[in-house]
Image 1: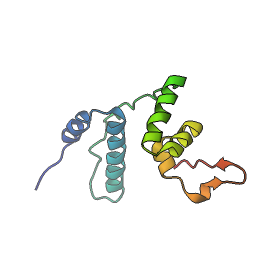
Image 2 (image 1 turned 90 degrees about the horizontal axis):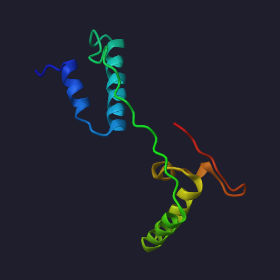
Image 3 (image 1 turned 180 degrees about the vertical axis):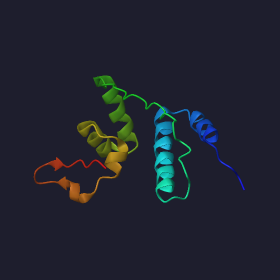
Length: 117
């Protein structure tokens, strides 16, 4: 039987190089251990007293006209110009647009409703 310690978890989190991924892993592990404690399957969370890894700060970059032109040229070459224009027009991330559902789009009003989970 393998025995897991808080130190083991700390090492795993420290080895995740992307700050947002490390934070996400911590949040998921914390939820799991809190669930186990509530159901009295373990006595305490192995993350007790451990601080969450810092999230990455939002990057801010505004594309200039030449970058937009280059992006549109490449997207035409790859036949993804419509999705590229939608991303540029809405400022949404690709994953948000990929998860877009028909009921979120009102074609008559020209509106896309953004749903945050």
